[in-house]
Length: 115
Length: 113
Image 1 (spheres, rainbow over the protein chains, first blue to last red):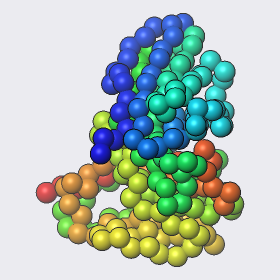
Image 2 (image 1 turned 90 degrees about the vertical axis):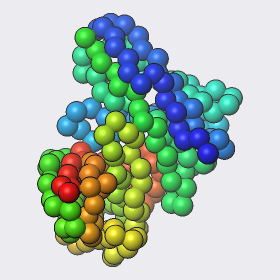
Image 3 (image 1 turned 30 degrees about the horizontal axis):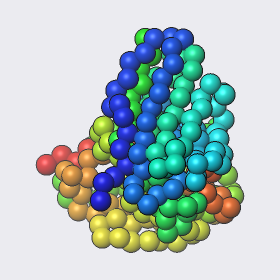
């Protein structure tokens, strides 16, 4: 069974640019979660998509947005990039609401570097 | 004060040692407690999952929750070099849902052969 895949592995941008990160969940998983893991900080919840709808978002500005496609893959878009957006962005997938006996499975992340 | 505090380490131990990893928290609403292992350049993987207080054992790993002290631990017996990774604690209130999980910053563990 293929795991959660994320692309690209690394992304280098400059301030003010826009970045698009992609995630393919495990086959059969309908929920996709996005997290930011900045140096010295714990994983911060960004967005949750399920069945194509945004279900919840974390405490991040609106320039962080995304979508989920009919095949359940997902994109995270970050506009007007700032230096503090430099971080590892992790995607996780699970079945349905994914709680209790339905663990999340994480991808290996996209390292976003802002110059 | 952070909701979840975790010593960043690094923690270096010899192979075969018993490792104790710990987190403290301040939110008494936390009911679900998790430990993740994250290898370098990889995503986290769930190791242990416990609800409320008590112990849970899985092979060489034991998770303990002391809600009265707001303190959780992960013990690794007979540590191996392959256990070298960053260990993240995570916790959530009873209403559940991964969007409500608060993660610690992680403790980096190195097991020396």
